[in-house]
Length: 461
Figure 1 (cartoon, helix red, strand yellow):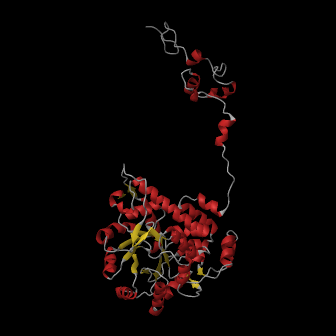
Figure 2 (cartoon, helix red, strand yellow; figure 1 turned 90 degrees about the vertical axis):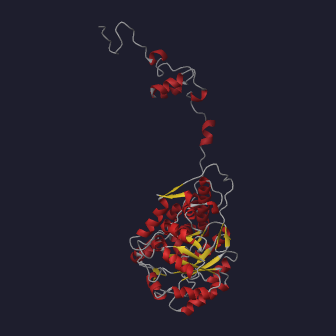
């Protein structure tokens, strides 16, 4: 038996020469095509060194010292920008606008916008509902031109969403409803003024005279005051009345309780300390006209006390019949959370409904509108306009809702984050982010028109 050497080769046969013996040690004898300064690369692994010296390698794979002309195009250093406009440009999602808003807004008004009822389970579930889907794209479709326009309540909207009614909006940022209505006008989408808005019906109409303005109504125990609001809305050119029916009592918004949230914000020691980190907000708040409302001239107290003292807990479908007789424009009922109630409001004359749990701000663990959407669409599509809100934080969320049967959507927090981040410019940025999200999502789905979206484009996980 022939003994083997240490390398495992038979003693009678010469050992295979090593690569280093054939090529030499690059650290000691660098090849001619490698500059002397490139010896630092000699510690690289064997395949890399072999590739570096192989005469068959293309020039692009041979080591060399980069020249200034090579590096110059890579060194594109920009001057730092710290302006509000620059911050808004850098925001590419609604969540990033929210981050800016949180830094610029005192805790009490930010939490009023950002928070929800009790443990905020409903809000989390509503947002998770949009995450728990799978898009089903089609391929080889012509998506060179994306059309986001759609019909809602008898008129065309440039995009399939509008701005939802939000209360106390000038408390979030001093431009408030004026910024929202003007941004909506510029974008060609509807704007909804809340009964608890901090600008009057007439002032919003004057600020956005060419916009499509809707008015949201809370029915009060005092029907004469409700009737006066309805008449003012009609006179100001609002074509749609949206009555909210899920606020028989105020929800337990615990963030507001902890913050001692009042209207107007109280200047306590805590708020003064908070102001030191957000001087721009307080400067704007204190140097503009005090908060006034679409429906009352002044109020001092907590939000919950205001709701409980004004809104009527005795509402029934008979009141909806009264509204239908009184209002001659389009009538929408906001706060639908069951299929049975959706059918009933249509039977009582509603032209449309908003599937909504009030953004999770009333009943915690309430039904999720996105989950309710398919069965409502199956039963009522074509009989009334089906609008959806709650949980929308991207244009992809809007596209998913439309695919599952919504005719239109409303955004509340999403636009308010933009408002708090940068006033009118921030609202414009929020709308632009949603526009780009929607167009990109539709193109990737292989859809060029809103009307072409179907349930086949979305699968619920």
